[in-house]
Length: 169
Image (cartoon, rainbow, N blue to C red; front, side):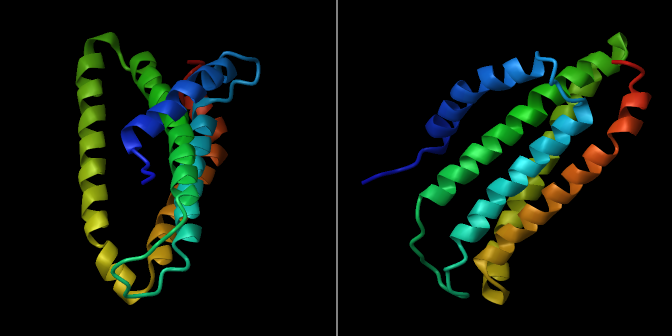
């Protein structure tokens, strides 16, 4: 039986890809923070797009289905690359942009925001059956394809404004 373990295989992607992203961030081709966020969100959207394509053959209302594992691997790869664009960059900018006396507080707020996001994701995941019965599983994943890509494009468009607001950081 072939299984895909999220913890070990996404960790493998991180181990393989982190040095490449680190090299990219250290090169002359290093994009600004908003571009990195936009790329990261777009990659996450593309990962959900792979799940939407993979689940397109699932009939509305089915309780079980068989889908190729390649769609899950592509989703994990895209989500890992998106995470490598968002998480380290955001933590770095929290430490750079926040006054020294407030760093601990802002990191706490950062992690509270992550907790709220995870709780919201769980609540959305609870709706998968309802959405799948009314529409399709592909529709459910397409929601999470369009929203991050849209926000990612907005983040990239706002790069000049964000760069100005960061005063050279």
